[in-house]
Length: 418
Length: 168
Image (tube, rainbow over all chains, first blue to last red):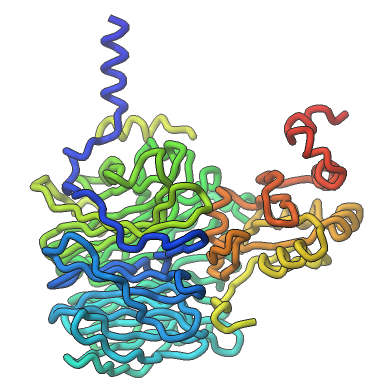
């Protein structure tokens, strides 16, 4: 009897198995391997957009010091190919960091990165890479979003000693030539403190930009929406403050690294790292908008109870125009760095799913990035190392959509509390 | 899902390229805190150990520690004399270079060092190797104990918990 109780307890407590998941993952493939000791590849960027799934291929961009200095590389994999092609350097000759990439409906990609204290962009395609175009000087932390042929770029640009978030529209012709729209500050009021790490989503409801903002003496998240062809509206708060503002929070609890994605119709999903539960570090929170990003609903924590007491890091989001959305992050609840997926299920989020082949004690995984294609397939890349502090590799896995129930409605449209 | 809900209810528990538009929290006044790269370079050159302070912009516990512990002259004298002082903003995108040669952000350093809540204080060897770290509000007396443990080399033969348990 005791054995039966133990067995039932184990089954009840076991984490969800992959068979319950909306995706079936294929074996991972290596995008970039360490050529030697002290070679490091990085997927970090504003909005965590280092992976894109396009019409013909999947593209990963990353910063690497394999040549002896930090530069930005792109690797492409055709949808029918087993492996990624040889990485190609897409940055110029300067130190380059924090690349992002988006897919264009007509085929090909546009990548952007920071180099030499400026932000740059170029078309990336197997046949005809376009010339690199400087978007702004004294700028960093660029992120992109694309819808059809329309591309939105946002970055942090320094003026008069303070960084502010700037937005511009990009257009790329078939030869790769880029047209850059007039850059404009998203928040037209002069910044009272630094603004940083913007994310952008572009959909039928317009453009929404979110960013970290220090105007209140601690980091908060603001967002601003622009209807198609219109200017950005005054910024609004995205993250809710803890109800009891005690000495423990000082001027406020911490938040960091917001990410956004446009979904079907006018829906937009946001996620970020939130320290309102200060005893366990950051927790990924999400909020949804039903009106293109004019307003977001209540903040919701994503991880399940098995993640209580540990900090989560590097939350990323991906969605598609059919309304599917998924979130991924890295945490060490099992004593090693693993990747965990979550998605909307009924009135809350799913139980956390350890990404197959991206969890377990034999390696340390971190810095996940995520894309979702029109079919709902997931494309996931991450950094992986055999020993903490050692050289690392970039790994990619394809999750094919399975036929499982899917709901988002219960998570959206509730008013936020501020 | 019901199971999840049950658990939720019961869970108690110099080069332009290097300039990443830094935004900073505030280290305590009157201390010559440096950024990570300058501090580690100075430590290697001088042979001094490093005192690393992880703060967060707007962090209440950091402010309390600054006002109640770092304001003590005995703490200031010993820490300024004995250590290279390094301040890291746990939410900043400012870049730094680890002893391994890997270039990461200040926030990512917090990930690597498992900085969950701020403040976190770490003592490092001159080559960047970790001696020990401790989280949360500390008193002036705490800092004086840690200084003796590190500066007098007690850490080479005893763990920090053993050392603290033997204090009168």
